[in-house]
Structure formats: C-alpha cells, structure tokens
Image (cartoon, rainbow, N blue to C red; front, side, top):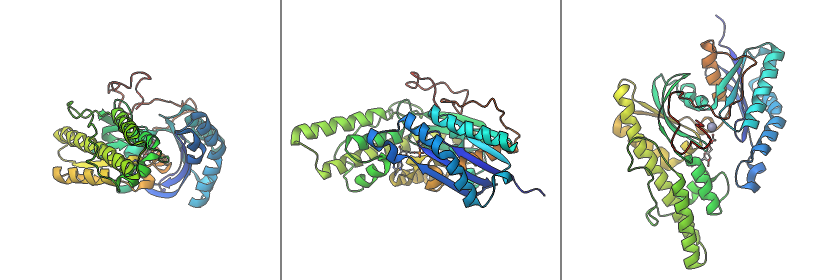
Length: 360
Ligand code: KG4
Ligand code: ZN
C-alpha cells in the first residue's frame, strides 16, 4: 500500500509566515514566523512591510519545516499554498514560491482558501466528520459556517463590519495596551468588573446570526474620553473594568448568536450535533467557557483545536490541501492570488462589507 502523500503547506496571507509538512493527519512540522515586532510602531499590520517580510522569510521557513520534519524537498508529493483571501502582496509571495517549487520539482500545486484551512482544522486535530457547525473568529474574519465538505460551505451569518479580533486589537490601542490586543485585553479583563460599564450588545435585537463589533470599540472610546474629561486620566482599575466590560459584550453577542446558529444548523443536521471553533479569538477563555456552556445546554459536541492550530499556521493549509488532493482537485500555473475569496459562493455579501465587496 502506498503511504499517504507528504504535503508541504505554505501560509502568508496576513502577518505570519508559515510552512508545514504533513502526512495524513500527522503534523511532522509547523513553523510560524510572526511579524509583531515589525508592525508594532504602526498600531496594525502594514501590508507592504508584511509582503516584504514574507518574501524574505518564506524560503527560510520552508527550509526549517523540512528540517524539523526530517524530510527533503524531493520527498514532498504536493505543495499546498494559501491563494487567498488576504493581503495581496503576502498571498502573492506564497503563491509565487509554491509555483516555483511545483515547477522545479515537477509536483502538483494545490491552491487553498485560507478560511477553508481554518474551517477544516477540527478534522485534522479531532477527526471530526462532516457535517459540523463552525464558528470562525479571528482578527480578519467572523462567520458561522456549515461545513459539509472540503469545498462545500454554507454561511449562516457573519460580521457586517469588524471581526472580533480586530475589535480586541482596537480596544487595546484605545486603552494603551500592546498588540495583538486579544491576550492583553483578556489579561486586564481578569482584574476588572464587567458590570461597571454597561456596553452595547450590537445586533442582538436583529433576527438571525449576523454580528457587528465596530460600535463596541466606539463605545469604549467614548467611555475612555468621558473618564479622562472627568478625572484627568484613567486609573489601572478603570482600564481593567473597561476591558472586562468589552470582553463580556463580545462574549454575550457571540454566545447568543451561536445559540441561534445552532438552532438553524440542527434543524437541517439533527444527526450531527457538533460545533467547532477556530481563529485566534477562540483562544479567549471567557469565550471558550461560554461556548462550552451553550453546547452542553443544546447537546452539541464542542471542539476547539489547540491554540497553535487555531491561529494562522501552515499545517491547516497542508491539511486542507491534502483533502483537495485526495479529490483530485489540484491547481495549474494559472492559480491566481485572490485578496477576496468567499467560502460560500452563493451567500449574499454582508451589509457593510459592500465597500470593497465580499471579503469572506
Ligand atoms: O487567527 P489569527 O491568528 O489571525 C487572523 O486574524 O487570521 O487571529 C489573530 C487575532 C488577533 O486579532 C488577536 O488579538 C486575537 O486573534 N486573539 C485574541 C486572543 N488571542 C488572540 N482575542 C481575544 N482573546 C485572546 N486571548
Ligand atoms: Zn486566519
């Protein structure tokens, strides 16, 4: 029997340069080179800086991934690469390298949707069967998906403006905390009183499972300015209470919308009661705990991949690539880097995402 193919995965769609080697569901190596320090002075990811760093580091990353996996480039059976959605310069860096490797080695090339990588991760980590409900919550994305196959996704709802991770990052910036904001806000929130500032729960009054987070960050800004105007500055406790209030609002909105998504999902898939989360915000303990409660209330199995596979990485791209490869879905040299690439091709663009078209 031939062994399962050895897949090299590449990821460069945002600010993490990553390469991984995978066989079947065995992650032989997963190297992630972050760029936090390169963007720290700018309060967010600068696309040109990110693209340049990816171009400089991708080959080093591949070299390290091969070394850690104990394999040579010649042994690789196929190359999977994020072809979108994401920052175009970074995606292009990855796609160009993958094309070069595929041509030089005469091996198949597989273009992977970054979001499919996140959405299929619970199959890599926990062997979850199709279908399942996925809540994808990261710095760039927020959506509920019914995952039926490696290329079969239905979006039940999503954010109409900011992603939750983006809201955590902006809140951190407003309160003078370091980036990435999620872990910093979570640490402060642990010291705060979530009931002191009553922040809005956006879109809870609207039916369905679309979400909105941009108003929350504005509410934080107003509260901060009111405290500064009234008291001349923020105390450590003010900041902790604002973080706690913000995190509670995100948690409440996400859990209520998850309840609604579960009802919609179960109506069509009663035999597969499973919810999985992915994306960096899934690291948040308050959110995880609340989602676990929703799942036990509604009889769903809850799956949360380990953090290193929840945040951006190339093992998820290699894995999604392996599922496509098994179906014979390879790409050719016409593979394009796509800044926008919705997973559900039939879903309407979300209100508010209209300025630049549907991103995800
Ligand atoms: O999935 P990810 O690594 O990158 C993409 O956005 O695709 O997610 C990064 C995001 C950042 O916005 C970061 O602030 C957020 O995940 N994050 C958290 C936590 N850890 C990371 N948000 C809330 N609580 C956390 N503990
Ligand atoms: Zn991501």
